[in-house]
Image (cartoon, rainbow, N blue to C red; front, side, top):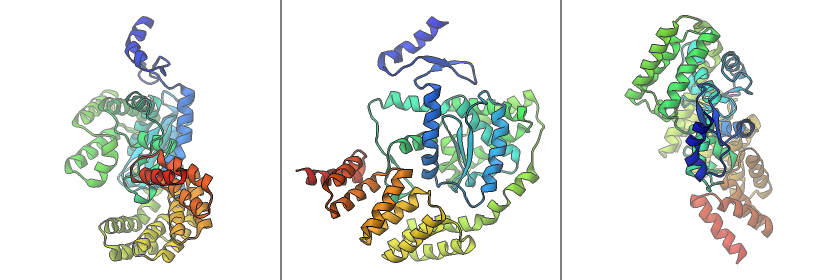
Length: 425
C-alpha cells in the first residue's frame, strides 16, 4: 500500500519541492495529495475568515440572533461529522447574493440572500451540512493546493473585487481567502459533499429529503438563469441533474423523514424578512447607480435608509452616489455614519479615507486608510497613502507605500510604479 501511495505521488513530487506526501481523506478514507498539514489548514482558515467575510459584505449585524440560530444548526451537524473536533464557526453575511462557502478549518459563512430562499430548518441543515463536508473532506485545502500547483512562484498578487470599484485590489491573505471562497467546486467534490452532507443530516435528525428539494430548486433556477443565483451559489456550487439523481438514490436508500422545522425557521428569519424591502431598495439603487442614473438611485437609497436607518451599507452607498454627484462634503457625512455604525468594516473606512483625501483632509485620510488596511489590505489604500506621504514630504514612507501597491496588478500597480520611479530617479 505504501509503495502504491508513493507511486501515485511521484510525478508531483518531481515538480513540487513543497510536497509533504499523501494523506487519507478524513471523510472518504481515500488517499489524496497532501501539501498542507492540519496545523497549516487551521491557521489558514483562522487568518482568512474575517477578511474574507469583509470582502463579501461583512457580518449581518442587524439581527445577531439569526447568526446564533445558524450557528446552533451548524453545530448540530458538525458534531456528527467526520471531523467533529475542527474549530467550526458559522456566520451570516450581509450579502444579497444567495451563496454559502467554507474555508479550511471549518470556517463557514451563509449570505442572508440565501436564507430568504429557504423554507425550513432542514433545508438550512442541508446547506450547512454540505459546507461542513467541504471543510471536513479538505476540499478547500485541495483547491489551495491546486492553486499552488498551477501558480507556483506567483504569490502576493491582488484579487480583483469585481463588484466594488472602490476596493481596488486585495492583498495577501484576504486575496487567498476570497479566491478559495468564490472558486467553483468540481462535480466530484459537489457529489461528495451532497452524499456525506445527507448522511450528516440523517444522523442529526433532519429529513434528508430537504437536500433533494434544495438541489431541485437550484437546478430549476439554473435552467431559468436567475441572475442572482447564477452569480452566487449556482456559480460556486454548480447544480446538475446528476446531483439530484444521486441525492434521491441515497435518500431512498437511507429513508426519509425527520425534523423539518418550518415554523421555527419562519420565526428565526422573521426579522430578516421584515427588513428585506430595505435591502431590495438598496440593491435597486446599486443597479441604477451602476447605469449612471444617480438621481433615481439617490431616491431609492433614501428609501432604504428610511426603512432601516441603522444599516451602515445604505449610508456607504449614498456616500458613493454623492461623490458621483460631486458633493464630497455630503459624501463625507455618510461615510462617517457608515463607519460609526460598523467600524470594523474595511470598505467604509476605505471610502472615508479616499473621500477625505479628495477634500485634502490628509490626517483624516491617512488614519482611515491605515485602519482599512488593518482589516483588509488593498492596493488602492497603499497607493493613496503614498500620495499622502508625498504631500507630507515623507519620501521614505511614500516609497514604501508605492512599492507595496506596485506588487499588485492593473492600473493601480502601473500608477504606483510611475510614482515610485519618479521618487527614486
